[in-house]
Length: 237
Image 1 (tube, rainbow, N blue to C red):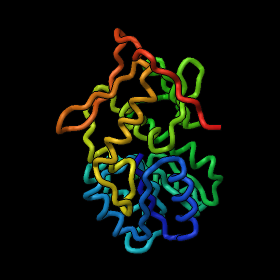
Image 2: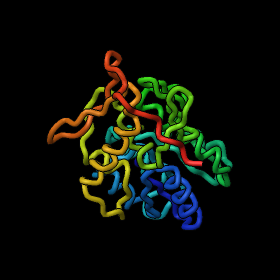
Image 3: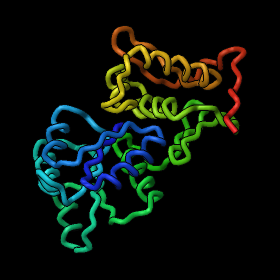
Image 4: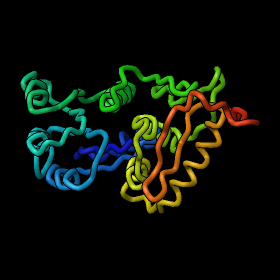
């Protein structure tokens, strides 16, 4: 998923960015509130991690402006302030959740997962789709109890497509959610990832259809048997 981190502490920003990228998310970082506001004006994100105390424009002002513009991106507010008024203000102007600094990265992970699920109408971190069990927390996919070998990018691609089940997702949209600003990746790479994912899910009833000149759509085809000869790829040790 595509995440924007707005944090002026470079050490914390580097640690958070590194952790989220290891989990397969595309993460971009801005240290200035005004610059982040400009980026949010032309780039869509699935989640915003927003510090309150920022140069250029503070986090509360930034969030207030976003909500006035109708931007509904889920926002996790990061704050080093213990004052209850700051937390109340953050929620009142449109924050979906907040996290006090210093925080445990495991809690950050869990709160991010919860907010990323909301737009997809998903109550828990586990999906049952076409015979597959998709565990967002563990970032694992299994079929009939056997784990599939899906590297982070392929897992993220599966999340994007299943999160928009039955709807066409453009290559550009997929690329924006798999890669960061500083990654120079062509759209042909999306075709490669989709091809790999199709092969690994061939035994299931989840089908990824190419919509020519538009993008890809995931559907469950209950009346279609698993592809003949398909086998579960061995999971990495």
